[in-house]
Image 1 (tube, rainbow, N blue to C red):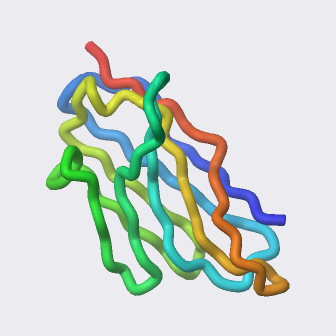
Image 2 (cartoon, rainbow, N blue to C red):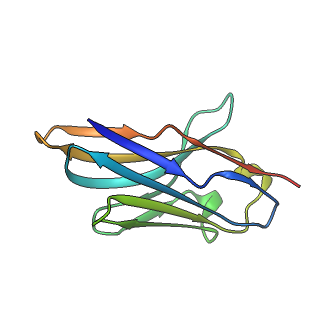
Length: 120
C-alpha cells in the first residue's frame, strides 16, 4: 500500500506565497515522475508542475516564473513553492507520483488534495 500525504495549503492574500509538500510512503520500490495538479469546481484537473527522477521540470504557462517544483529523492517528497499568488491560482492542489511498489507494479498515486485560496 502506498500513501501520499499533502500539506501546506491555506488562505493567502494576492501577491503572497505558500509552499506545498507531499510525502510518499508505504511499500515503495522506486519513485519516478512527481507532479502537482490543481482543480476548480466544474473544470478538469490540470497540470501545474512536473519533475522527473532526473530533475527535469515542466510548468504550466500560467505559473512559469512564479512556481518552483523540487523533490528530495531520499525522502520521497515533492514540494511546490508558489510565489506571487493570484486569485486565479485558487484551487484544490493534488500531488501525483508515478512509482513502482515493492512487487514492482507501476502505480500512479494521488494525494487527497489541499485547498489553496488566494483572496484579499
